[in-house]
Length: 316
Ligand code: A2R
Image 1: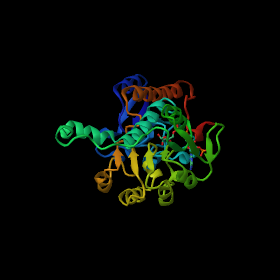
Image 2: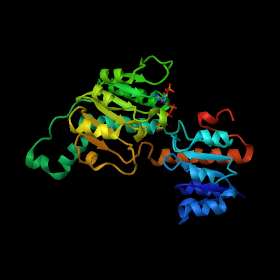
Image 3: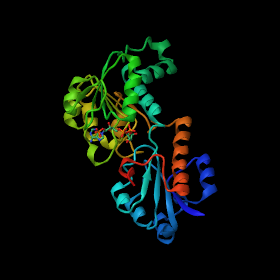
Image 4: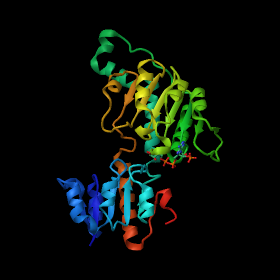
């Protein structure tokens, strides 16, 4: 059977299907992954990984006969696609099947920021309602102007869900899309015009810290920042100081610069809502992502074609 390297975890359902066609080697089971790769790397033709672990450059170099990398997740910034292209290695990911879930997470974070539900829940649970009286009033999440940074598949799903909250949706990306929403070619200008900025671009060099001090200041003391993309998109140190100094109102964050580490200073703030990167993290959506990750591998093994290549590999 063909040898497949699994980097990171996989569900039982994925492992069951993979084991029918591949000899699966789990890198997590190796006490010294580099030593294992030095000895066994040459027999590996397929890799299954995820958006967080990706494939480290030295791992990639230790796999001379690699044909394909299947990534569980839509973001693939932890895989160097330029090296993959040079070596004619196909890279696939799992777009679309998580659009609705990540969009729900973005909207839930926005609602949590405005409506203060987490503090209200603690107020109710602690018995303080009875002893101290009503919880303070929150702010309405309805009728807001929301700027979406990255109006792609997920960004559009967020825009669609926001219609239920009477939002005015505008967007920024590098190119204008064929949609009836106001386009800003300048991110800072958009940030100064909106109540909420929702980040949903890919990670990687082109978006690294594009939400910087200038953008955060433009969003302002009443502004809300939501990040469901990658931690690298926002300058985390600048975000913390903006929140501490009241130059930014609130933030709802599902992603961080050095996951799973969340800076202590961020965890101390009460004007943030923090999630442990669960944007697509439901049983249903993760099952769909797992199925597509495996479908891509099996199809490539059988026919050499794939279902969902990353854009860089679409012409291969
Ligand atoms: O810039 P464009 O016209 O290529 O539009 C894409 C936008 N985008 C950017 N916007 C501003 N500055 C950039 N440097 C930049 N790079 C890309 O992000 C497009 O509108 C959007 C990405 O959309 P999709 O490729 O359809 O990705 P999808 O499936 O919505 O997922 C977005 C990201 C993933 O890469 C993960 O990091 C995360 O959501 O879960």
